Length: 399
Image 1 (cartoon, rainbow, N blue to C red):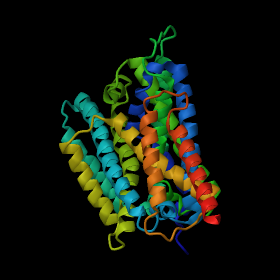
Image 2 (image 1 turned 180 degrees about the vertical axis):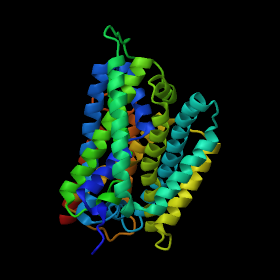
Image 3 (image 1 turned 90 degrees about the vertical axis):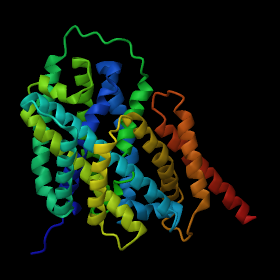
Image 4 (image 1 turned 120 degrees about the horizontal axis):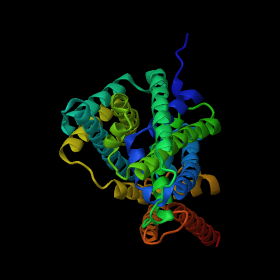
């Protein structure tokens, strides 16, 4: 009997992406919007994730429809060699994500362990998490679906318990101080977190047999899990008035189970980052194996986490948005509007220049607070500019 590749099934994709959303980083980011209060905070989560999910779906659909990974679909806009530029940026941000996820998980584990057994060492926890991620890489995507299903069920149970406890802990007479943080910034943080997966999603949707359903399931599964995580972070920040996730887990009496959840939620999310580095590296040099590069990424990410702890998480999210949102705006215009499916150029200079312009637009818009954040306006502006430039170019060529 032929072995089923669960990456091609809707259930497999759903479990993969729900597991990707369950992470300490998502909760920590949710805590950053605690000053908005419950009503505005939940509204920012829903609006931000709706915007991010719509954009993420478009990227996932292209990969699923063309049955190609992200580096391959980016060739449509950047050219055969131009995709190397994307791959380099993507590898850099994935190394960053790997180290950020490991150090966030290690900090949470350390706090819980110190409370439970009176001993903690962040560096040791970084190594422990790194070892588990390497094990995940060794097992591989094909064999992980059943394990992911079990782990996701445990995640869901844990966070339902955590969420219910937080809801009951919210004081009835709670008064939230006026926020110094705008609603637009809260929305943008949600969008930025969702779009941190923009350069990766096609690496996994390229395996599905049903492009629309597979992409929808992937995006909805991630968005649902992510909104739960953000909501827990928001409530925790409001109830406990602090941002240390380990202290919150202990105060809620979830220490032992919390250790398990923190380890495996970090592993299931970070695994995707390391695996996508392997895919990007293979797009540069076919002789580099995906698992080999993914393992090296995990080791290097662990060393970075041990030696250079990250405390610039918010800025890191904005960096990712400013790099990749404009690029995919160009790709969306080429694919969906101009119906372009291939590019024989080595480097498509026009689109690379448009990408740079989009980066500048994003950074400028960061100085202005809009209700919908600045990612969506950037994408719409870049798509409009790209379309106008194409019309002008066609008009000149006809003459």
